[in-house]
Amino acid sequence: MEKILAPSLNCANFDCLRDEVVRLDAAGADMFHLDICDGVLTDRLSMGLRDLQSVRRNTKKPVDVHLYMMNPIRHIDAFVREGADIIYVFPESERFIANALYYIRQCGRAPGLAVGWGASVEALSGLLPLVDYVMVNTANPVSPGRDFMDEAWETLQKLIDAKRRYPFKLLVDGAITPDIISKCWKIGVDGFSMGTGCLFGPKWESKSYETIFKELRAL
Image (cartoon, rainbow, N blue to C red; front, side, top):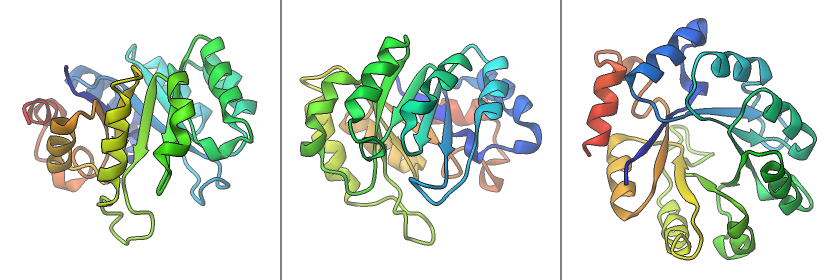
């Protein structure tokens, strides 16, 4: 089984987003990850449809959208139309989130469940048969450095156990470093949303994207 390495484009250089996507694609990215935030489900505002359009025009790799928004079912048609392959929704974002997951599949896209901070895996167990992907937020939302939460290990282990019954891919997002990738990979995590902890920013400018991908795959 090979690691899924998904650059989190919210952390990329927006002055040259097209060039970033082309370089990351050529370097070996498996898919591209976009956080779409409406400022309601979370207090952040982030990427939107125009960003998705730009990414989709410049890669044939899968593109996922991580919908930090309330009532996302209203906008699924738009994300499908603009070429999203995987659509993540949070269970608390809809009164009946299963309806959104079924609709995503009906549209011919892969439904994904976004698991937020402190979520109960037991409470979500009925949704796991409905999804192809589960994305777990692992960064502490209130720490100044948004560090990896130690509590996330228990959540990840429960989901890894659930993968024995349901064939979803498990990915992690938030405070992802090479060390975290190594530890997660060894326990059965399938993929990683990669931001400033292992791919983007001044700390990594001395290495090419290709070199970083090769080193992370070798962990």
